Length: 325
Image (cartoon, rainbow, N blue to C red; front, side, top):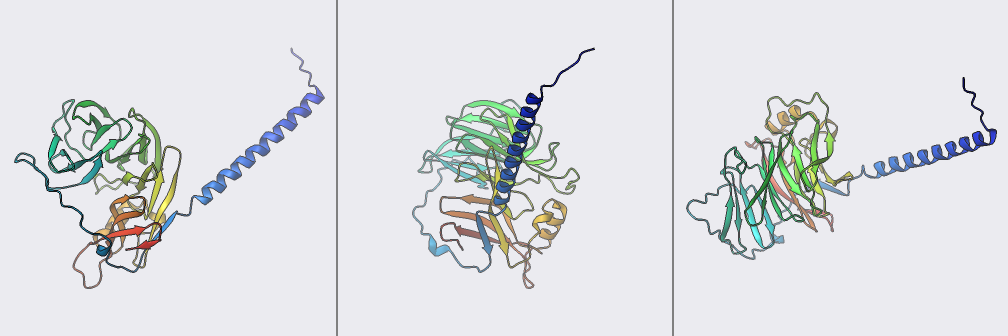
């Protein structure tokens, strides 16, 4: 049997140290909660109220005809990225990514459909990593990312457990994937390292969310001007700024028309039921950000005399002047 003697002075010192650590812990917790409270308010409030034409804000500078040959079919410009003076255009209908010069001349085309190591059954989206100088193609059905260099040489293919239909690359070289609701991680967004490993999950949703009648439902994703990503959940009215450490509201949409309640953003079936009847206004799938503006699509609630389910608008938000067109 062992007898342990406690030094009274040592016990007192231990208690004092414990109290100090406890106070420090409380202080850190309070600071963390305060930071979270600050992040609730969006950086920009986009009030889609009065409407005005914004065509006069722009002027036509140049028309660049695309020098496509007979075999280079192109009908659906899904995404355009300008990188180092080149135009990269994705046509998911024909499953091809076109690379053209600044004058519109064809340089190369990526788009070998199939299930081989260098092939993709579809191309849902693409991104260009500015750090590694790689073109990254996303396939929905293959659940993979295919990597090419800027000389059109295939590098590798990475397969993932979750299905994704939108991707983006940040200025730091991180990759993000907008993950569909049919996944076992129950999150809407993945952050990948430069090597393609999943490092962080964002935007959890309840495990009972099952949009049975809907296919490939995911959040809306693009690169931000602040070196991260912009992400909008499918039935949400808030665009978040996301990086490898945090996510905070950046743009919050409001309108005099009825909108889907933010606290019901996980009721996907209810949201799309309203959308199909033209009963609500909401931001659309696509938006892009520049240093001065946010460009976004907007579906306006159908009026009493309208025969359209969706009345599509284009919005331009001036961040410096806090004005909306």
